[in-house]
Image (cartoon, rainbow, N blue to C red; front, side):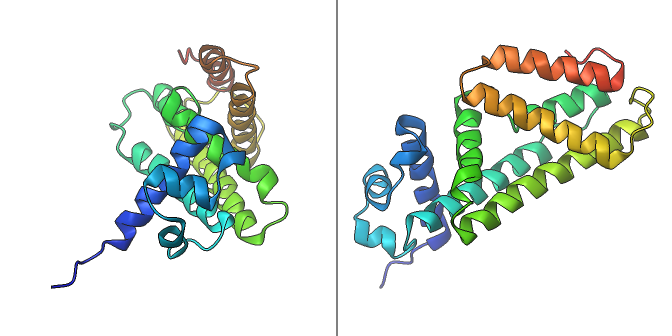
Length: 199
């Protein structure tokens, strides 16, 4: 009887191999050859699933977006709205090795998306999903009356939140902030926008 192959599972294995290569050697080292080696596959077998490096990176980035979304959905229901927003935003930031690898993959698309339409599509999905998450966070804070008095609308506040989170993430990835410093700056921002202690 022929062996039944779970193609989605095999694609997830390859995404994990991409993350492994990035964690150990950086985004520049991702190639059909290095990912095949990390997965224990032949390059020919890998090309059956992904013909190009761009396809491989795009899939890995979309897996990151899906994983982070799943983790956020699995968080316990909020009892304190400010701490809930903090916990959700930290799921998207490089506070540990796993999330650092995820952020490295996602932010590698800033440059990679400039010359590749497929990667640009994934980059747009990453930015759009993060902005929509920030809109939800601001609307949630407003619903709980946990925003400091402001004349700014939801869109403006959400874009600022998005910019703060992305900016802190990039600074941490570049080594300009430690994870603890990044979290302290996020707490300072949340305290400012809510008028409450976020730490």
